[in-house]
Length: 445
Image (cartoon, rainbow, N blue to C red; front, side, top):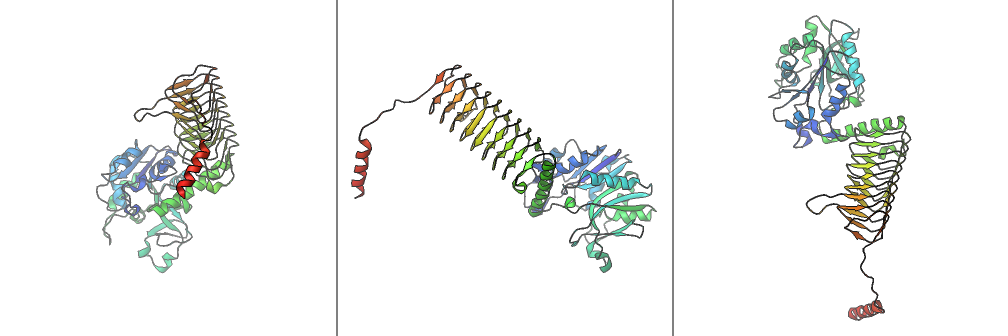
C-alpha cells in the first residue's frame, strides 16, 4: 500500500443537521466523524492526505491537522471539490482515494481492495466502490459489461427502467490513478441541470481515453452517509455493534451487550466482566479481571487489575484506580489516585485526592476540594480509616494508619496512627420530645 494519497471531501455545511457546527464534526463514540475516517485512512500509511473544506470551517481544519487543507470557495459539486485539491497533489503519481468526511464507517480492508483492484491492470484508471443495499432507493447505479468492467455511473433520475433494475449502487468513493487525475478533473464540465461538476463523469472520460474502469463491492452499513441526526444515530448504532463484538471476541464478557456503550478508544483487558447499562466515555483503559457493575459511568480513567467498580459509580477524568481497588455504589471519583486495595464502598465523593493503599473510606465521606475559587488536594495515607459522614476540608493530609471518627469535619492534618475526631458535645433534654409533640397537637386542634 505504498504511494497512496487521500482526498477527503468535507466542505458540506450539513444544513439537514440543523446545527451550528459542520456536519463532519458531529461525533460517533466521542470522536468527530471525519476523525474516524482519517483514522481508517491512516492505517494505509498514505503519503499525503488532503481535506477539502469551505472557507469558514476553522473547527474542521483544526481537527484534521496535520492533513493539508484545500479550500472549496463555492459548492459546485464533487468534481469541483476534488479540483480544489489538485494543487496539493501536484506531481503525485500514485493512487488517489476520494473519500467523504460524512462516511465514517468505511473500513481499511475495503480501501485496500480498491487499491489492489486499481493496480491489477495498468489500463485500469478508476475503481469505484459499489454496494448492494436492501432497498436501492434513488442511488446512482453502476453499469457493467459482460467482463465485469465498469462502463458508466448513471444517476437514478437519468436511468432507464433496465438500469434502475440494477442493484449495484454507487457509494461515491473512488480510487484513481494519480497520473490521470488532473486530466480527468479538468475535463469534467457542468453542462447539466444543476450546473455542477460531477465526479462521476470521470468514468466516461476515462473510457473515452481508452482506459478501463472497475468496481469493488463494500457492505451497505460501512457506506452509510450521515446527512441528518437520524443517520447519525444509525451510524452510532453500527459503530457500537462493532465495538461490542470486538470487546467480546477480545476476551471480555458483556452480560447484556446492547446496553453497554463504548467510546472509540475504550481499551479492555482480558476476563473483564461488564454488567448491563455501563457507559464508557473517551479515554478509558481497563485492566484484566475487572468487574464493572451495572449502570456505572466512566471517562478519562485507568483501572488496574482485579478492581471492582459500581454499581452506579461515576469515574470522571483523572481517576487513576490501582489493582484490587473497590469502588462501590453511588461513589464519584474525580482527578484522584486510589492505590492498591483501597476501598470507597458507597455514597462518597473523592476529588483531587490520593487514597493510599488499603485505606478504607466510610460511607458519606467527601473531600471538600473547592473553596469557590481554587481547587485543593487531600492526601489520605496507606491503611487509614475514614469514618462515615466525614468531610475532609482540603488542603489536608491524613497520615498512614490514622482513624477519623465518624461525622467529623477535618481541616487540619492528622498524624500517622492518630485518631482524628471533631464533634460538638452531645446534649439531652429529658422529656423535650414529648412536650414538643403535645404542643403541636394542641396547635392543630
